[in-house]
Image: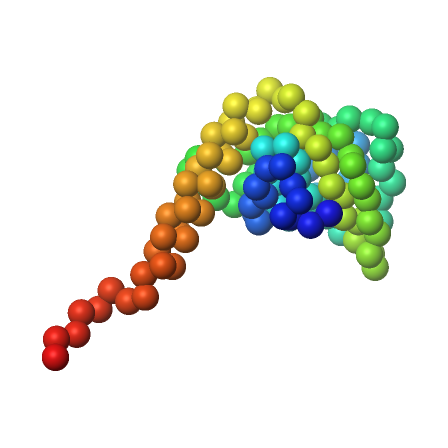
Length: 127
């Protein structure tokens, strides 16, 4: 599903994922929103599409939130080469308030970056 069809804005984020019920190896977070996330694992994995999973995500943007413990439910799975990509819906979790705080911070950072990109140049030239 394309990003423009999503209900919540997704943010490209890099983070390390630990999901014992899915894969013995750590995975990587690809993007995240208030309601879902996409991650991939370095090996082909089996995922029960009817099961909820507990995952720990160590985020790269430290300072706001370093780690999130979330309950997720798989929505789709795609195997490519020797990797598995999985999209998850985020369920109500103990760290949901931290996730919401993190998403709010990312939205504010994104809008500030967009405003900075509107400036053509900050140099002043006198003629």
